[in-house]
Length: 104
Ligand SMILES: [Zn+2]
Image (cartoon, rainbow, N blue to C red; front, side):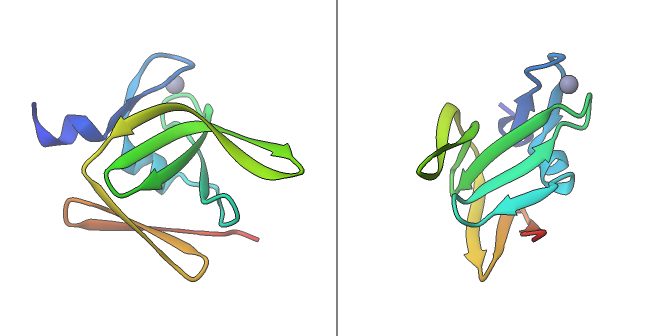
């Protein structure tokens, strides 16, 4: 399996495949509190909420039960490296690093 395909996700709305990096580039917000990245798909602008950790992508939804929490719907293995730096999330895919910051 080519390495790149592991970093591909399928759009739940229209069924298109898209690259994780496109989702990171389109990120609209980062909720430090729950470590959730808000973004939209490049194909049809469907809203996506995801948590990233080294080796894993978790797609789900933020919900509020007292405090905001994240419910994981899907979990994928991915060759990514993730770290946080102050209020930013740094995601490394191959030799490229993407920064996602809180937009206030
Ligand atoms: Zn789509």
